[in-house]
Amino acid sequence: MPLDFSSGRKPLSVFSLAGLTDIVLLLLIFFLLTSSFVTQHGVRVTLPQVEAGAPTEERSLSVSITADGTFFVGSTETPREQLLPAIEAAAEDGRDALILRADEAATVGQFAAVASAARAAGLRILMATEPETRRR
Image 1 (spheres, rainbow, N blue to C red):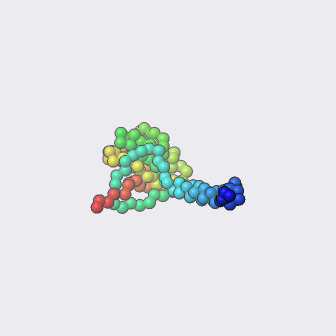
Image 2 (cartoon, rainbow, N blue to C red; image 1 turned 135 degrees about the vertical axis):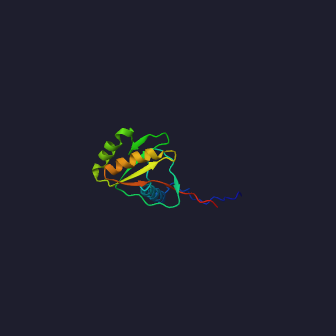
Image 3 (cartoon, one colour; image 1 turned 90 degrees about the vertical axis):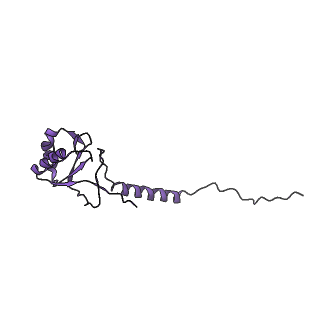
C-alpha cells in the first residue's frame, strides 16, 4: 500500500496587497516631502568652498555667472548690459535679496557688475558657496 503524504489543502490563491500598498504609499509620501526641500538650479556652476555659511532666504533672486562669463538672472541668459533691467524686473514681486551663484573661474569684474546692479535695484547681496570638505 503506497503512502500518501499530501495534506489535502489547496495552495493559497488569494494574496492580500494591503501591506504592499501601505509601504508604497509611505515611500511616495516620503519622496514627495523630501524632494521639495532640494533646490534645483538650472545653471551649473562650481561654487567656491568655504568653512562656514549662512542659510539662504525664500524671498531671493538667483543670479548665476558661469565659468565662461555668461550671466543668468533666474534661469534666463542675460547680457551684461541688460543686468540692471533684468534684475529690477525680477525683483518687482517683493524680493529683497540677490543670491549670487558665481563659478570659481568668474572674475571680480563680473561680480562687481552684478553687485552694482543689485545695489541699484535696492537688493541685498548674498554669495552662494559650498561647504568645504574636511581633510583627515
